[in-house]
Length: 66
Image 1 (cartoon, one colour):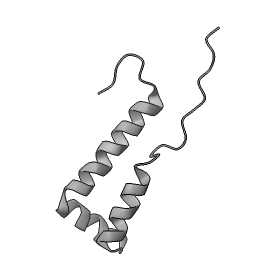
Image 2 (cartoon, rainbow, N blue to C red):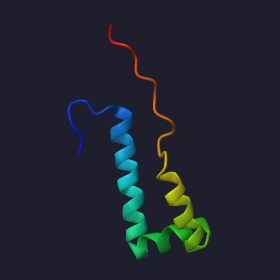
Image 3 (tube, rainbow, N blue to C red):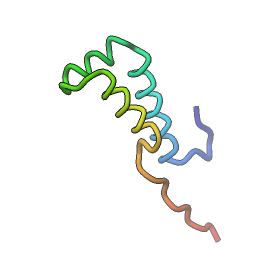
């Protein structure tokens, strides 16, 4: 969950990470993704874990509010 000061980037990153974690935790969903992408389950797991580091790219620079 977020709070009033959660940025759009932080919110989107949390949603993406939750989604990837759900895919990794549900065996049948992981099998489905691996089958659709014609990849091994281990490769799909690796790719999802790699995406969890920065799912929406690097954070934006905060602008000074002065």
